[in-house]
Length: 380
Image 1 (spheres, rainbow, N blue to C red):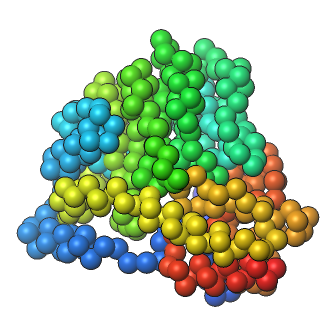
Image 2 (cartoon, one colour):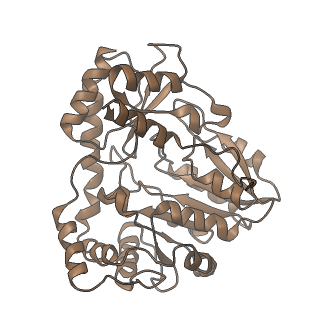
């Protein structure tokens, strides 16, 4: 049988490639964004309790109301904004499913979607599957800040959506209040939808506030906010997330969501609903990860790698241009094979695979893991 691929240019993701290499060479894996430490035992207890209490069948399509109510409270407490738990909040099977569903709901053939590169690799395939067109704006190393004049030049009558990501994966940069004001001015009075990927909202450093789109009046009315329990609570394998949006958008989102996955894992939802009642469960995460960032950077300060400290996420970019002229892909592969340390080359996320000699390292690891990784980096 023969068939035409709907994604002819998509290959195995770099995360799978580097993860496989790391396993083959028994390397320290700082490539994929997952913690190597345990989940809070309290959360495990709550999941077990929910299972024992019979929450093992389908959850409501929109998500367990107990969890949606706690998310509503969280947005009110953090950002002083209201999202109706009945009509404006939906629980999803991870943030990627939420992103795919938003794009599938609103993007039609030839609709244009603005994406800032380097970008997480799930955006463009979803747009392509829905016959839209990705309009790519490259953020320049090493600061990865937005040139708003360039954004204005790329907006057209076909622009249907702008996808933003702050804190930003893979660069670790964070959008400022002024960035949000600029974005709001561009979309105000248009039909452009903003998809705001905010999965690292609680992992932001140096006492900087998170600038969510929901804090800006006109942006809130034109935006989806996508969030992740996996990133926040070290449970990436549970694939639990959610999104919030004005009721008019969420109504359309749920039409697709119900046929995409119908509902997310029920006992986990019940557990998270109880866990969120203690705000410290997420309010202290920024300091937890800043300690790890600072420990890692202090340990490699005498290495030949150059860096600007990450402002958010649990990723750190390292510039290796003083070490070799190899492409970042070749150097990342050699780093695994010769030094047994896995990282992610950034060129795969850039427009035209632009190579700035940058590798991304995940510091969501135990202290001893970071110590061993730092020793390797300092020996190169």
